[in-house]
Length: 529
Image 1: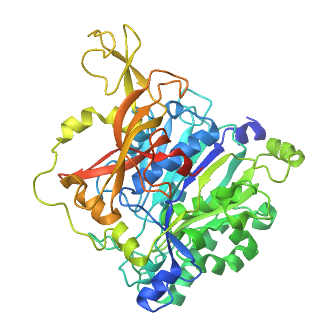
Image 2: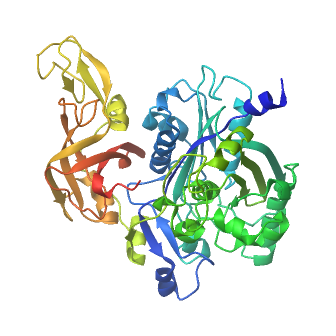
Image 3: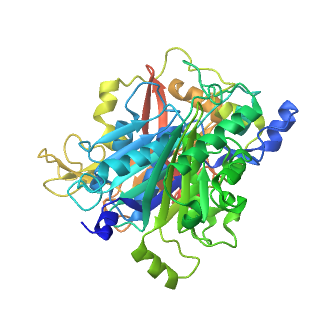
């Protein structure tokens, strides 16, 4: 095998998706509430809504990455999911993600966690697992690989960790012929207890609070992983350095150890406007660095710069360890890039990195469930887990039924055909998730069914709608099917009859300790691209 063939056998990044919740809390609100500074270098933090978690955010990012790469979910041959804050400490979250995205249930899945470098470890492991083989690298029967990283760390309300805690997710599609190659992987670990940890059974991240001790652990681990790459950083000359960022100052402490200018770290850092997004942080920074400079999703920090063609990505985990990956445009693509405009990214990116709804401190505590009650006892609509499981294709992916006799649609696909009355059965027909509002109202305080009371306590009143969902061919398809859906909170408020909406993944409610996931809708005018 030639050197060029060897390089081509290494999977690269074909598309990037990123998602940050639209809700945010300004750092000034924390300072006013607690009378202290908060997280250094953080201007605002992203706050997950009451019906969002790392699994719904992962789905949002995964769909965006697939769209960016032009890859269908059914073609994915390998999926890895990384998070330190899964919905449950013990459960196959990756399997639920497979279902929500529409990936074939027989593909290999891997789940990573336990450290904020989990995302970098997941990417490195996926590259190694698919290198030079057909199993997920993009050219063989396995299909492309998908790596998804999501996190939503928390801290005790009065802590610096809580002041900087954000939320977000990013996803990468890997294929053999992708423009951005993974050139090298380096790892380093050295026991430094107490730098960042979460005790058994606790939801709060903490540290022992010895500042210099933590800085030294960070710079040593990050520098050691980059040195282990076995390449000259000066020769790589990265346009951006994307690091795990617990706050807005710590990444810059590593500049000297890495031999890079602070501006390169700024190009791969979004923590100032998202907060600490844990394992997802370096990947959100990567999305920002790769985004077109004219893309609003990249935020103001992209103004005046071209999309990166080489990136140094380093995931750091307290304790302490780091995994570094050197990413650069492949030689064959670099030549074409030279003739392209400076505003065009070598890697397609679909990212929603900035919120558009600002919360007060009390509202943020409610959204996070810090100051809310629970579901009242009794009176709720009981749906058993086995019954819910039977409707997962409809709830996760809007799978309708197409009558085998007349082609009419039924949602959910059960019973006789609503048009011809045939009992011959249905073929699966996945709806695109777009539709038109037929009726809408808002459920005010005290009006929600018991299973939705906790959501209402945390997020307030919420709109609901009856939606005529488009048929498989979209708005031009006259075979619409109607279904009720909650409307997620957005600046658009309660939609009007005739408004267009799009389905998004959300937590519906929790019952018997099991989170039920499904679709809600967001007005198209409020959909962030």
